[in-house]
Image (cartoon, rainbow, N blue to C red; front, side, top):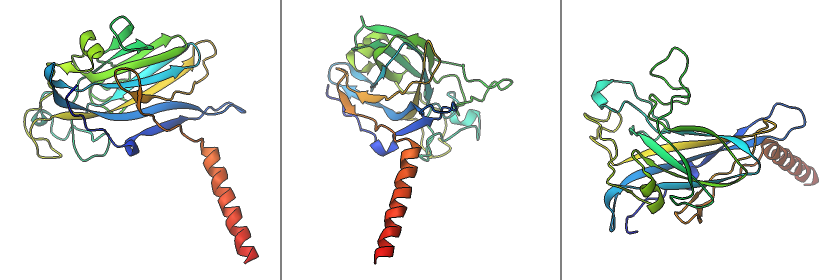
Length: 256
């Protein structure tokens, strides 16, 4: 494909450690990854938007949650809801998004697709019709909670409407990113040609309920890794390293 996609900095990737409160249990890891969907032009499919692919492995049959944070305001215009925007990633801009993703097993194809996720309201706080517990303002952020067997999975993530053909071909043809009316309250710009997003992957063993480690990493359409997310080091290891460094520094001072 001929479109050019700007790769986001690996420094923006973060991993969220989930502490298991049971004594003697090691901490399980959720994966938190970030990226950007952009308007682009493909030589074959014409104008559209990019698609990101993220792979993850499950070591056991599990309940998996994939939660999206992308929408930073109201989709019907900057001027419609003054001051009702949240800069989710602290980048000094507000982007609107209506996300969708499709889930595959092992490889990406129409035949291997399991399900898709569009708007999700699962994180709505009680009594709050406009706020969302994961930080976003609308249910336009996709959300999936489902049971999956042990194995290798890939999601195709993009802008709505991301249909089966788009996910399998690697480009969201004919798609245009939500255009906001009025002026962006953070940047002063009109319209938008991209949006940033964050995905959180959480898994729990289907039988025991124990949290499972999830290490999500970006892949291309063929499933080959692009920029694997770093495996987070448990906090106890960092603490041990700090103590060890302090001990060695003290010993060095004493021997001087």
